Amino acid sequence: MAGTDLPLRVVLAKLGLDGHDRGIKVVARILRDAGMEVIYLGLRQTTDSIVAAAEQEDADAIGLSMHNAGHMTLGPNMVKALRDAELEIPVIIGGIVPDDDVQPLLDAGIAAVLGPGASAEEVAQTVRDAVSAAV
Amino acid sequence: MATTKLSRNASIDELYTAARGGNRRALGRLLTLVERGGRDAETIGELANPDAGAAHIVGITGAPGAGKSTLTGRLVVHLAGAGRRPAVLAVDPSSPLTGGAILGDRIRMSDTTEDLTVAPEVGDRTFIRSMATRGHSGGLALAVPLAVRLFDAMGYDPVIIETVGVGQVEVDVVAAADTAVVVMTPGMGDAVQANKAGLLEVADVFVVNKADRPGANDVRRDLDLMLDLSHLTGQDTTDGGDGYRPPIVMCSALEGTGEADVWAAVEAHLISLDERGQRLRRRHHRIRTEVRARMSQALANRIDEAMDSDVGRELVAHVTDGALSPTGASAKLLDALLGPQLEPGLDPRSEPRS
Ligand SMILES: Nc1nc2c(ncn2[C@@H]2O[C@H](COP(=O)(O)OP(=O)(O)OP(=O)(O)O)[C@@H](O)[C@H]2O)c(=O)[nH]1
Ligand SMILES: [Mg+2]
Image (tube, rainbow over all chains, first blue to last red; front, side, top):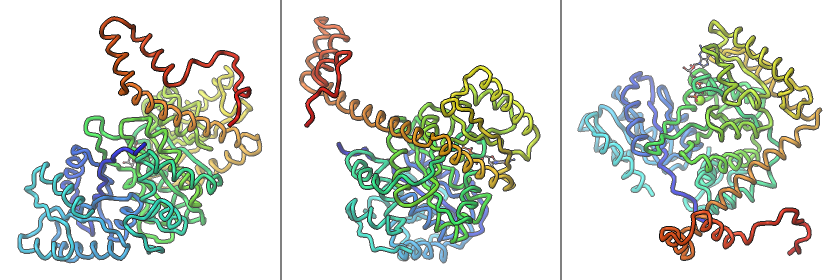
């Protein structure tokens, strides 16, 4: 007897000191409504605490919410921390990211960048695509 | 931090060995396979079985929002600080509509106690896993005991299970622990609610959380009264009615006062189980519950197969034609599946052994 297919598990967090959690809460609900399991870590996480949670929760993807212009250092730091831990988990950044920064982030190993205008369907599909691309 | 190099398509044996060697990512993957169920989960159960059995299994339940996760976070920090290696299985409900879930216990465990995410001496000794109920409560009854056994086999002790005390399966899960902790709060008739949910019977330790709020002493008094009553009416069946009375511990998980008392009461209960010779009885009960759940699942699978078989389809067609009653069809299918029903008084020991 084969096991059942499991919903995708997504760790959602904010890195650093940025204190807005409205956007990330909306994304949590979007992903739940798309049938995913969201492990919600909330604010003030570090790359280490996210790696630890992703390991223990066997996350399929990590969603980072960014609104404080720290994405150019924090995003690549996250990718590096995951690589150091030998975790091949795609990282998706959501929030306010200037167009010019998107390609450098993708070059640094970020799987996708979602702007504030993304629809619920786009958000869910981006996560699914990032997971299938990583497998 | 990974101690062993782990390939993407590592076998279950390799994962298990790596996890035993301290590779947390391997343990995370094994827990996913356990949740998925089926053959892989069974294999993991077989591997873990001989290595497990030492852990103190603690269930924590109570109404939604009672502070179970906040308290669990405090306990974990307290335990890790004392040199223990606690594991937590935090069970949260899935959305019945989409099957998705927002698993929020983890953030609650860490948001009052930064140590959990920041202090490596705590984080490295601790493993926290969130699990969604996924609607089918049968799955929970299979996955939880396996996940607990896996933690146990990895040397985690205690293994703490957090569930919301609403569904029967959730209550059963906690009742099957060595020590069942029921968390109450000041508020509208909490003790009465807990009574209705059947939580009073399963509690080994009561915690009145949010003791920083007014009304906490009223809850304690109500509980005391109820315990007196169940004592008087002889309904106190906790541990076979041999006189154990669950203690009531006051605490504020938010402020971080009382978690040491909570843990002391939990430990005292385990010692009391041993002294009264009840620990083995608990284990029997737990194993019985699990074996029964596994049989139910296996039978349900076979019933589904039988319904989809040619015979099954034919019988259903006969019922549709009016040639057979649903009862008759079910009896025939069951006979085909299990053989004629066991006669009463049939001694299973007289069956030839293979
Ligand atoms: N005043 C006060 N609030 C508390 C205390 N413990 C927890 N809380 C708050 O109660 C709310 C719920 O806490 P949780 O720990 O998430 O409760 P829970 O029982 O795990 O909740 P569910 O898992 O959703 O059923 C949070 O806002 C906590 O900060 C306490 O001792 N005092
Ligand atoms: Mg909780």
